[in-house]
Amino acid sequence: MRSIGFICFFSVYLSLAGACAAQQWAFSLYGGRVTTEGWQDALSKNANFADAGILVAAGAWTYQRFFKDALSLEVEGQVGKYFGDQKHWEFNMALVTLRWHRFPWRRFLATTFAWGIGPSYATENPDVEIAVKGGSQNWLVYWFGELTLGPPRSNWAVLLRLHHRSGAFGHIAEEGGSNTLAAGFKFYF
Image 1 (cartoon, rainbow, N blue to C red):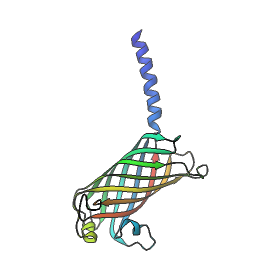
Image 2: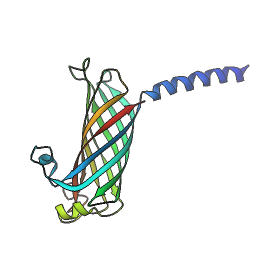
Image 3: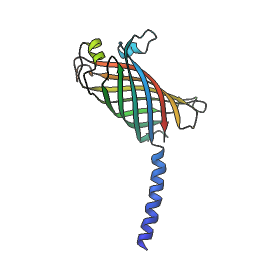
Image 4: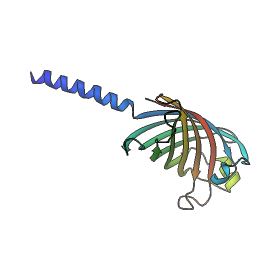
């Protein structure tokens, strides 16, 4: 009898955990071009671009929500492949990501804004970073700013992202870093 009770309890637990987990995950695909500007100038209409781009696949997990789901904490892992003047792979892990969900127009346009930070590893010293910044190294700091826009209560959104590698003001590296303006899609499950 205990076995049947345990099996029933475990089955209910797994179904509830699966339902909760289904709302906690996201998968993103995006691509963009590397700029030759600092991050502040990369967002201007006069930004200059290098002959290099990146395609990225990312998975994110929401591990905490606050203020009645207005703010969430996430972790995101990424794999990126460069093309053009640099052809290396890049691996990023945004260990801390803050995402704001509550905007006044959310009934008409689901909108989020996120900022995340963590380590970045390039499989080769990035050629564009060396050309623009005078040097680089494999390990740098990664951070991003992201805006998502989508239909209300849907499981997808368009994303716009500033993808940034940094020497962290000389704490990690004296030289190196890059900024990429990117766009793509985010899928929630």
